[in-house]
Image (cartoon, rainbow, N blue to C red; front, side, top):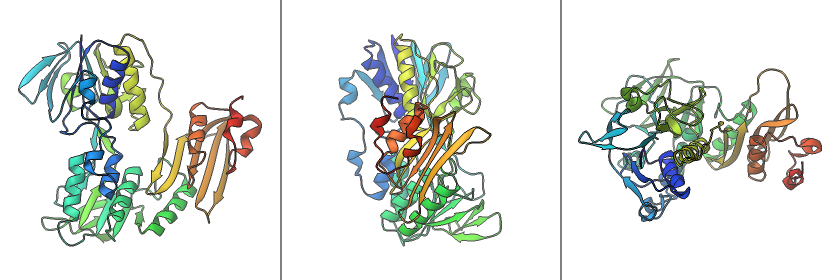
Amino acid sequence: MRTIILGHGLAGTMAGKTLRELGSPAEIIIIGEEKYPYYPRPNLIDFIAGDLPLNRMFAFPPDWAEKQKIQVNYGRRITGLDKEKMAVEIDGQEWIKGDNLVLATGAAPLLPGIPGVEKKGVFSLRTIDDAQSLLEFLTAGPEPEVVVLGGGLLGLEIARAILKRGLKTVTVVEYFNRLLPRQLDETGARLLRVQLEKMGLKFLLGKEAAEIEGEGKVSQIKFKDGSQLPAGAIIVAAGVKPRIELALKAGLSCNRGLLVDDYLQTSQAGIYAAGDVAEHRGRIYGLIPAAFDQARTVAYNLAGQEKKYEGTVPANTLKVAGVFLTTAGLILPEGEGFEILSRLDEEQGVYKKLVFKDNQLVGAIWLGVKKGGQEISRLVQARKDPGQYKSNLLADNFDFSRLNNL
């Protein structure tokens, strides 16, 4: 029995790792385009900031795959897929055949279709090579004015990392009228902006880029309202798109992503998908927890231990440019029947918001404070009814162990 996994990011690596942990005797072959072993993508931010050297980027020791009896092929590109024969073509030269295939091809940066996006000085960030190219450009000559297109999680993290490198002018441009439009409401976004401005970041909100100008290399951005912004380097952090080209060419059913059922099997029996490429019940998550959950589900099904994927409650607990943030579940409820409790401390930079439906906790924002963030996230994922403690959850000193017996 041979399982071939396409992609050695989080989803591909975890699928292979879990399959072996489940005791599967299958031959496991992982094929990936990057020349480096698996590393968590958030490490790219620490690398750019100068906090993490290249040799400490990687998740596992150098001999990990060998000890697990997993064959990992680095720097190889899949150029063809035959769904009936369960075969893949590598680098346009050789075909290898398996008994099962797992597509964990991930996503690619979404570049806006505006004139000038191909100019020298325009970057995206998805790989170690991307990060190294950006750093080389930023340090090669006079300090450039840096513009980050995108005020989501990635854009803010990139901006803060570059600022930490010592560059003085970093501006974040966001199409919506607030930062983190998918993770924060207006109150939280405003508070976060104040905190980040204190660190030295600049912001332009409600702006849509129309053209990147410059002779040969970037010199400025022109916006649709006619305004302009000088720019010596531009980093695009405007989202990602699933890499479904291989699946489409092979005749697998796709929509925005590669369509999978509740067992994460594609339209072809024996071919599975996980991570940023997969579309499950009309949803593409693009989140680390979802990729992890999906990879493990695929592994269980490959090992003959039937397992359904019921979805992942969106949840993040992280530092956004140095500010602690936890968001989970439904934070911007629409319709009737919701109850919202919140607490705002402008001076301390703390904002807490809880969303209830039928007394169950279905969403939360925890900004500016770390304590309680993970506990709140777990409560949201469990749709917990906190009972008599509902109004106490926002207190700084609340003991979450009180909920264990509810």
